[in-house]
Length: 421
Ligand code: 4AD
Image (cartoon, rainbow, N blue to C red; front, side, top):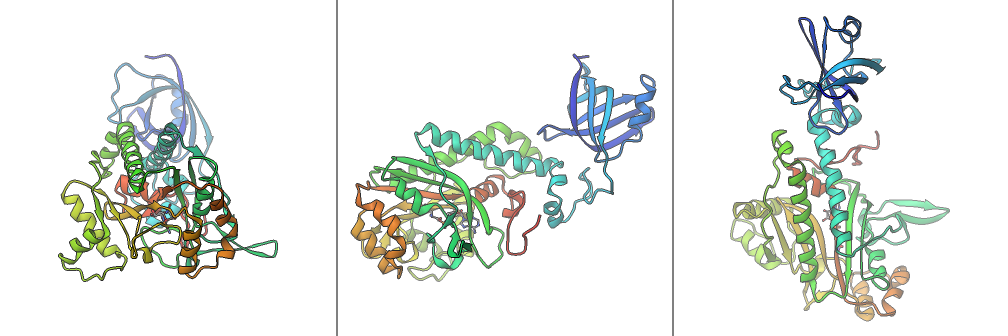
């Protein structure tokens, strides 16, 4: 037996076999419970206590690890002392043994209890690793982590998805993205990133849209061209996935997650090439049209068959992209998307850094340059060529774990029908 140690956690299963009690406890951030063993003959007082312990109770246990573990789950503690810290007052609304699945909504309504289930806990452990690795990678590349306002005067991504706020009698909005601010910062620091919430008043309900999400925004100055941005994004996503697989790939696989074990080099196809692939496979899309989810799904499967779940689509029509994107000839732009498994994860591009061209872009998109004066001013004082991207972190978690619905990747999702919990 080992030195005595302490375990704290919640009872996720109780089995009494004759004169031995096996209490499974979900402790720390582990994905498999530890089995607490109590034998009637060694400690009858303790036996009295644990034989009545309720499912879901919070316990503190002192005990020793045996030399030989009998439990299939791999970790065992022979209890010497057990304290019941809290007991459920009601029947648990979801089955924490995981034997009877709850509804999709109940896993969200009772998220705090669902987190005791290894498969749900694993998602949020993975999410935390993904967020940390994003920060590690960008910091190691000399990017400054910044924080920009979330209550703003002007929308950056179009008027249709703005939530308005009454700001002391003045009309303001919740930020759809840090776009304008991260670009303004390019006039003072060469490379920035932000991990933060964004708000989009999208009225529809899909498996990939939220009304409040977490995004990664990156902006880099002094670029040669948009390829510098594509390369950085490719390296970032590859790094994050590699670290995720190294840290918990085996556990994720054994819990049934369809992870991406090997992220190959990302193919880069132009919008025109993607359109050709689609139209030669039964689609009838006109030049300039956006790819709908059906088309995206098809492209996802097309690239999956080639063993490359992640791919870039570049040179989008300028008309389909926001005003801040640099034009590439009369009709095209330096905008790109990164799709993984048929879902758009990030969009970005090279920005227009020349004041007069940017002013013209605003007018051409039907926007009033006066509303953007604070932003435009930054382009007067030595704005270098720059580019970057916005990446949906909730979507990244979703695709790297092979989840079907973005809500599974978020603790307390905000969608059209969900404002609580
Ligand atoms: O494509 P979006 O709207 O691009 C921007 O926000 C630009 N400022 C990016 C840039 O730097 N040019 O959003 C970026 C990403 C999307 O690719 C998607 O992954 C995610 O944010 N996203 C959403 N995720 C969940 N729900 C929504 N409603 C989302 N809207 C965008």
